[in-house]
Image 1 (cartoon, one colour):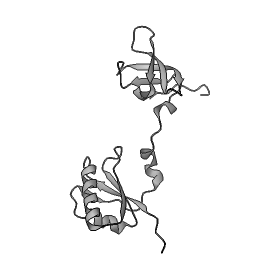
Image 2 (cartoon, helix red, strand yellow; image 1 turned 90 degrees about the vertical axis):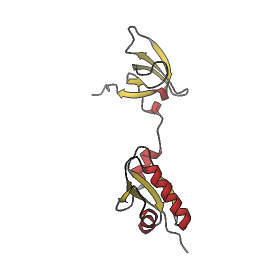
Image 3 (cartoon, one colour; image 1 turned 90 degrees about the horizontal axis):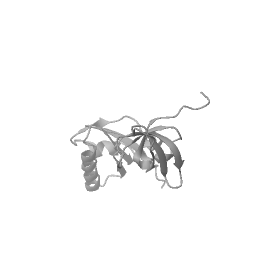
Image 4 (tube, rainbow, N blue to C red; image 1 turned 30 degrees about the vertical axis):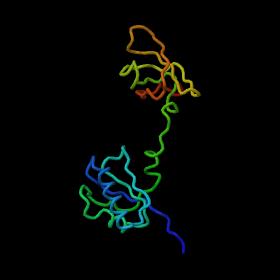
Length: 156
């Protein structure tokens, strides 16, 4: 007997109620012993809950009558569509020298700065604060930065 590959289905929910819906679905799946392999709630995709199962009928049975469920999104969801929400790239891989960044944590929180040097091995960036009255180079953990604008490339 060959096993069918599992598929990904999306459920449309009331915004902000995704985790509650996921808990209700998980309870129903466990009590009815439905073949649902995973339930996924993504912080970046408000209003959707994803179920990994064999067929849409299982999803319909799992969500029927549950409060805050608006309906089933027709068709299957491809893994490539949600992959960018599952795999996070480190911020340091997106940064380049001369980029303008905003400091989002630490003692310089809220200040803007220009990247002076990037040290990939230590995940640190040396920046020059733009909001300071004089040039002040500061070394900051790359996770404390948010990219504001990229430096202009020389080819353009």
